[in-house]
Image (cartoon, rainbow, N blue to C red; front, side, top):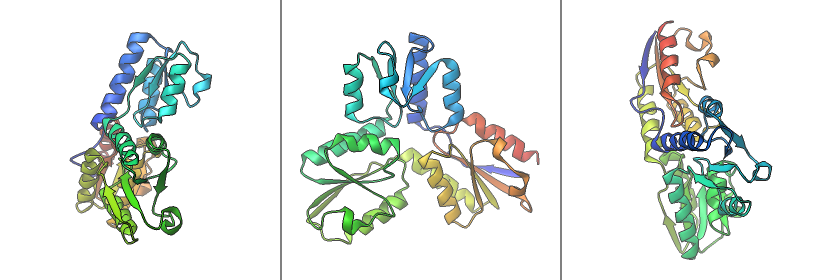
Length: 280
């Protein structure tokens, strides 16, 4: 089978940095001495490799022994987590992506400037949960939000977005917001350029193939959006994590397949998938 691979794919710099920080922390402090608050990144294969190297993981700060070092995941955390970890005597290593940190800083600044802060994103995503903690009140909205009920009728809005959301989605949401009367709306671009490059490459590849495979964690927001963008171009698309989830019926009658990958998908997973697909 002929297989074409997206020109931009796989690990972004934020993911690379987080993995490097995690590995160095374990090497320096020893196996079982560093605990990540939640998965470091949204990729099960990478998380498993880190656990094999000696990184522990917990979603509950209270269950972690004070002698252990806390690793803040790439998605960041709200200020209260840092304060509580310090109070409990933990050393803290921060692997938050620099772009997520930027979004945190922007939310704080917008609030201090008197704006009603609005974040376009998934309220259950760890990045969003962390970012909105940097202001006393942030309204999180998505495509299903009733803006008339969620947002003030008038006033000054400060708008940011989840870093992994596509620019098209963010633009659509901003257009919906600005149809309502506001004295002022300040929009700060917090989208990740690396995610956009991967999404653009995947969408472009849709024009050259008969079926698309988007590889990456099923909980990865940027990978899910990549798959949705490909589907929106009318190309049959499958979002799967690894070759083990592949089924031959996915390529029945197809001769050319495209492969793209989210920003937290390792190159080894991509290469294995391409190699096996080409062998069909």
